[in-house]
Image 1 (cartoon, rainbow, N blue to C red):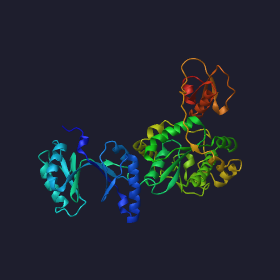
Image 2: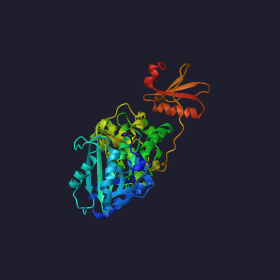
Image 3: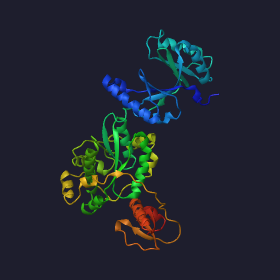
Image 4: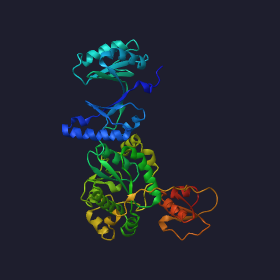
Length: 444
């Protein structure tokens, strides 16, 4: 029988940390203190330092939380045995775990006072266990691991992966611009893994539908970020002004520069040392080297782009690993500014267009507050019947009671916002993207 090991087998969870041990003693003490606090928050238990390991009482419920604690390299459910009964206890342990499968024995001596070295003990313990299965150092299916300490040892078979990195909060605070797409959650996760506490901020260009969907994405990232809450500020008025006053081709540049200025103001207000974005070099026209250089000139605070050298497949793979990909993939793109962006804007062009605007980043900071998601209706129009089609890029007409409205835009996001507002006012309203509406013959 080779089923799951019963929980009664385990007494402790042995937690490993990697690069913390390379730090100077004062820095190490500080990082271990933070790591212990974060483990306690994730599991409810205070870990005990055991040389180069942290130790928790075993709880199956603690395992998922540990897998999301930055600074944890790996961890193992383990059984503690006394050294004077090591051989007898190891024989019982092997009998419960090998079940005829190829195995190997791996020994680590944390206490160097033990009279036998690791290789000697591996051979001796292997000879005890070989009546339960064949020894195979290369193609083993079970690794019987032993860690020796003064007076006792820990036995275990599995190493569960943690995220590694540095303890959350050990490197100060950063403000992460969070849009809910595939990139921004991964960018926030990557800087969090290097020890920064993340303050996620969504600068909302549209309305309640988008805010609600971005909040849903954030909720899939939140288990990685202790205590973090999504904050939101409405920038829809400024977006409308950019759309109306800045010429086609430079609206994205003007929008990004304004967003950066708001982020810089908010970062200072919230005690953050840098701004983090999910931008990736060359991914879209507003993310060329020339464009990013012009956008960066809008702020005097460091802007970190942890995804800069990754391609979309790599970013998507990481999003799947951390659990944000599915919710991010459901997000619709904000497409309302322009149909084509200039990939090589100059600073002079950007400044000339900004001179047409009357926008104030400081005013936006006063609008910052916690996310307030709404209960969203189903925007899918029912089959049959007639609709009054509203192409939102042409403006919204005065609505009439008793009519059924179908709002349409290129990708459907603005259409859903308009349909939501109409419903809030008591109208029957639905939304589709333009292509779907055409395929269903709902518009000509």
